Length: 104
Image: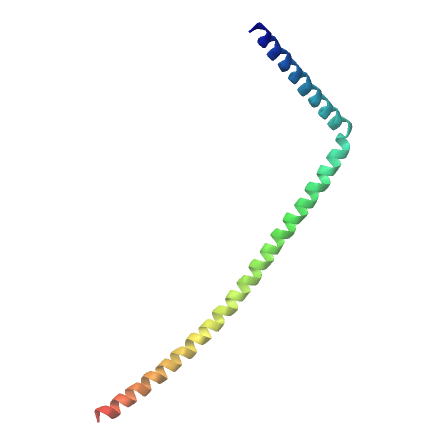
């Protein structure tokens, strides 16, 4: 049992040393190339910003076009409604005329 505890302690110490070594190498890498990494991040996030701004502008432009299309549709609908009312009035007059002739 004592040897199992020692083995676990040695394995834990080896893991800790390895993890610490990897962390040290990673931080050293970041420290050495910090300016380059910062420049790359700036470029990448700048491109992402431009893309989002373009999409936002496109969305607003599309909304304006849709508003204009809806206004045109409303005008066309009003004309269609007026024309349909005239046709129904004409049809009602014809039906009334037929009914009057049938009553005589």
